[in-house]
Image (cartoon, rainbow, N blue to C red; front, side, top):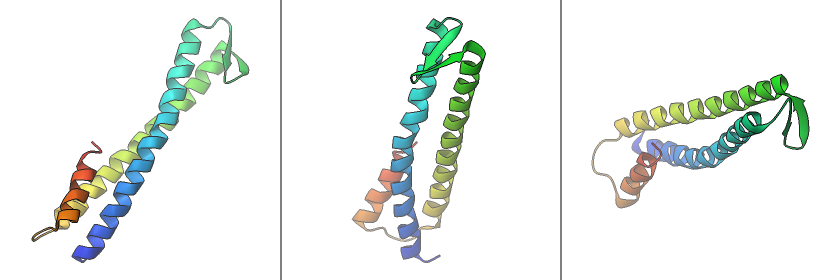
Length: 108
């Protein structure tokens, strides 16, 4: 890949990581909410206005955890791809390119 193509891919990756960081909040919140409801609920647990038996509510919490792990895995793979892209850059970087790399490094 040429230098310019690497920078374009890195910009797309930074934009995607921003989106994934925001998206990660949803399963994190749902997981914490479901665990709290399970801990403080009785035999019937209400999750998002739907009443479940305790066992079914636990399964819903497990599903939220799997979604959370999936998004975390996607973010991890994107960070690895970004590191590979950065390693392909050689020579002097312009100021915007250096800022782009700094933005990427904040997503750890």
